[in-house]
Amino acid sequence: MNVKGQHYHTIWIDNTDLSVVKIIDQRYLPFSFQILELRTIDDVYMAIRNMAVRGAPLIGVTAAFGIYLALQNSTEPPTNQTITRIANKLKSARPTAVNLAMAVNRMLQGIRKSNLPDEQIKIALQTAINLKNEELENSRKIGVYGLPLIENITKHKKDQQVNILTHCNAGWLACIDYGTATAPIYMAHNKGINLHVWVDETRPRNQGARLTAWELGEHGVPHTLITDNTGGQLMQEGSVDMVIVGSDRMTPDGDFANKIGTYLKALAAKDNNIPFYVALPSTSIDWTLKNTAQIPIEKRDPEEVLTVKGWYNNHSVDVRIAPENTPALNYGFDITPARLVTGLITERGICKANRDDIHKKFPANEKQ
Ligand code: MRU
Image (cartoon, rainbow, N blue to C red):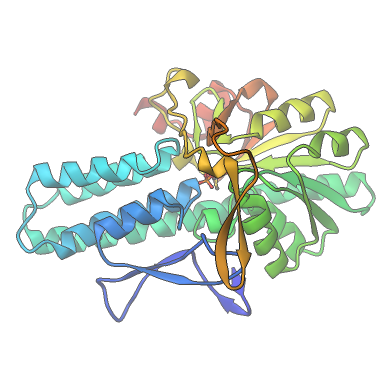
């Protein structure tokens, strides 16, 4: 998408220096637009862990480039043991989004096709680039398939404004471009559909306030920031036509983990008969899962709950909002059961959130 008129992806390799991977550093948005250079596997690990990059598809692609950088920087050919240690370290950076482990596994599969170090570096670079391009295309197709859902609502409303609620940032910043939840929104907006987005602030890290509001604003999509508790009230008064969220890890039955607070939005949407869609690429489906108890839910530093990050005098500052020594709990994600989901918007089209429908869309993957 465009930032101040210039087109950006969230991650790219520096074509003049193949030892540098560049990312948009999301820790400083919306206040400061900064590009961060990643040169080592440790840079990549820290960028994922500290959330300079975040969002399920993007952390997968970043980890893939991390493996490439690790090979590129090795003075002597890394042993199998070293590669496995690097892979496990990357996977542990953020546990919930399955895209991370999947991308790392795909890199390992690729590298193991050769024993020659130079060849392995080439394969690693090409595989990381392929993964990036695939996620880009996944998002684009999610937009294409999701657009008719918004068009139907606008038809029923006789072109009155369509109001869509979203949680966290499942926008282009969480992907490579377009986003997942936002892809249909951008397409509809580009087509001239009269729409407006309710943006949940998404405590504690405020990905909605900081990132979704910023990217929608940059693209000129009408939106309003709301506190996380406001969605229910808006639904009851008829001001929400549809909810679209992303997913970090879905079971083959359609139950899924997404940013903490998603479940409560799904409950409120069900109670108010409002369509609740999950936009996700198939790289966010974990085909090995038997149930949601197997999804590792990330617990983050309680400091994120006890403080709020803001911007003051050109610096990022943390402001304390609770008494000293208050115990705090900080789950990053929650689980929403498939029964609350109206449908999935995938790169292969729309389907119901159940095993049969998901299997029909992705017959090969289920066997993994
Ligand atoms: O903790 P984050 O910011 O990485 O969480 C991101 C989300 O929960 C997104 O909704 C999810 O990754 C889907 S992104 C297309």
